[in-house]
Image (cartoon, rainbow, N blue to C red):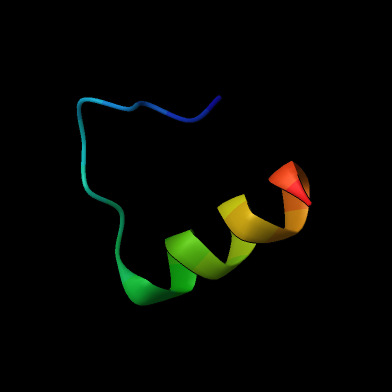
Length: 21
């Protein structure tokens, strides 16, 4: 779901961090 080749926006980062955590 998370593309390491793309830098997500602040909102996307928060969602990714929630999923990873």
